[in-house]
Length: 312
Image: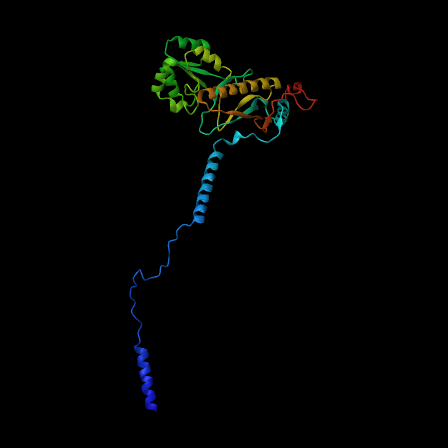
């Protein structure tokens, strides 16, 4: 009996040890179950994708239209003041400072399209802000234009001699305005002075209206006139000294705003691009800005323009 059990145990051990796992064989692809199945877009999922694309398209379009105009295209919601009220507060802000070093400044905000044409011109104020205009004239030697420049009070005139002066004294020019006669434009272009005069804003060109046939008329227009140029939808420039009376400041503001409105009308006629004047803000060298409402007299009945006409 014991011998029989031993034999059965031996046979059992042999059968267990002899059992081996089948070798791994490659299974044909057509018999293997597909782990990842390609799903076809169903109706609802396709509609959802369309809605997502439309939403992204609308977002891009909104972003493009949002930055189409400058931020100054929308008028501020701050309180507006009459001219006398604004001057009253600005004069109070400048108390204790030398009047000769303090000026009023006007900011004219417009609804302007980005990368569009800009407004640039000159305005002749009834009461000049600066009286240090020094004009030089590029004209042929011995011409009638040179005689007009000499009689008009130009500090420098000529052609080759003036070119040489600009090259040798580029950092200490004796003039701050430069105009060119039409007959000297070709010589000016050959001289290659754009690198010197361009950064100073004195390079004569048709855009800045500094190339002319009438030297005498251009010089008369420049004396007492100030240049202005639109930057990011705003024109900023000094409009008067802190000692100006309300009447003087009012006339200067009217002259500038009227000139800008004429420029806007001319721009529409020329390029069919419309710009709107949005807001006029008055400030001073060290004072805050006050949006003007177009009124003149103060809201305080006890204050009139005579109180703002005295020395600070």
